[in-house]
Each structure stands twice: as C-alpha cells, then as structure tokens.
Length: 195
Image (cartoon, rainbow, N blue to C red; front, side, top):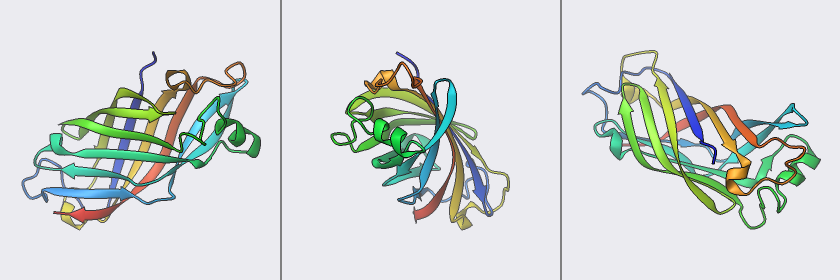
C-alpha cells in the first residue's frame, strides 16, 4: 500500500502573530468556501493533465491553546469535479475509477493533530469510493507578519498531496492512466467563527 502525505502551506493575509503567543484567541474556524476547487495533476500515457476537485463543507478549526484539540475536515464533491476535459471527466466519474454515482464525496476527517512550532502533523481517515484508510498529513503555517492575529479574516493555503488510485480501488484504465494523483493548489479559507 502506498503512503499518502498532504502538505498544507498556509500564508496569512493581513496582520498576525505566532501561534505560541498568549495573546491569541483560543479558537478560530476557517472555512473553505463551497464551490472553491483544489487542482490536481495526473498522467495519461506519461503526459501531465490537470483537473479540479470541487470543495464542499470543509474547514480547519484551530485551537491555539491546545493544538491537539484542533480539527481539519475536507470534502470534495466528486460529481462537480473535472479531469480537465469531457472524456477524461466521464472516465474519472465512471464505476471503475471514482464511481461517483455511488460515492459522490471524497473526504478526509482528522482524528489527531500535533504541532511543532508552525508545523501541524494531522492524522485521520481519507475515504474514496467508500474505502477509508488512515493517513498522516503535514501542515505548515507560514505566518510572515507578527502582529495581531485576531484581525485576520482569511488564510491562503497551498495544498500538496500524493494519492494513489489503487489504494482505493479506483484503478480503472491503469494501462493508460497513471496511479498517482498529485494535489497541488492554492486555496482560500475565510474566517467563519472565533471564540
């Protein structure tokens, strides 16, 4: 079984301060707006193609006092997603790949988060085609300005991941389409709630 790692590089827009500061609010929830997309790269006959997974009901809930109490939830709306052109999208949604008719969502739900300085190690369950596997994610929060975090209204993330289709039974057209899907995309999170 192939390992899966997801790297989140978050650049704060606006004024902020380090997560270790006692002046931080206790908790904040940043939501990815529904309809936003995360780009991915895959190969057909060793040639790179680009697609997009459409985000639905996703957020990062950050507890600054107790990072282990933070939560990360990511959902993709499979039926609204695209493999870049109509034929490839039709094949991606077909029964031998994502089987979108029976499995309309891809999800990652965290169950443990630890932090070392600005790096978060996130473990949880990634579910594709109804198959769930425990994976480890690493998130790097890049906070360039160090003033008042409480005024931040949104975050920009850059997301990286390697996902292997065969781990989830999505290996249709394997003679032509590569096994690895690479997430590589900017995504914006907006402040939804602050305690």
